[in-house]
Length: 245
Image 1 (cartoon, rainbow, N blue to C red):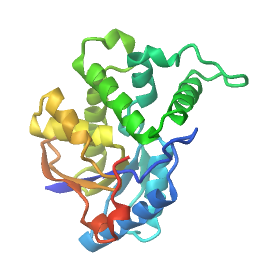
Image 2 (spheres, rainbow, N blue to C red):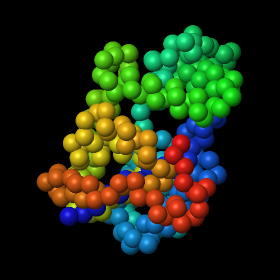
Image 3 (tube, helix red, strand yellow):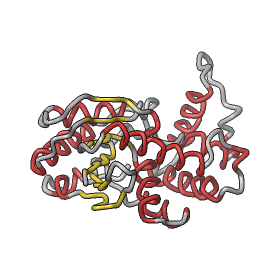
């Protein structure tokens, strides 16, 4: 059997207008991932990354120290779900949909800006965001309000499984490294272990930035979980290197 290594991106830019970029620590975590792949002796027949900036930047960090891989492909199926839209659907009291600063036309950017304004007023923005995010995700995963979302939880998890199967077909029995986000890792681990939706997303809260999850697969499409959320390469570099958001 061959391996697929799912890498969660490094720490992104919390509380910035463009969250989809790595912090300085996030870039360092990318290099730590590359070092771990070297130690493991991973020679990937191909590398796949989602279409998000933080995926590409984490890969770039890994490539600073790890070079044993074949061609690189992008697969948007490994993109994260739209957290801002999920919060907006669950928390109309934030007036995200009615908030439109001058010069900002994109609905997505309006959501991000409105959320940023709200969080900036909070005593502890990270704690406030986590509370909003947790209640919003619970509503999304429940499946009781699917009409409120462009992509329901079931559609999201199916997208991630489809991306996985596409990668298996493309890899043709070779080892693969995939740079993605916590949501797709959660969806794929759920698929491997047969977890229900409630227990699947509990796993998401524990996934670390730069964590590595290893799958084993064969060309008939059988996939099993070998390890989840490995973080030794991060811990060796001190507590600062271990982040969750």
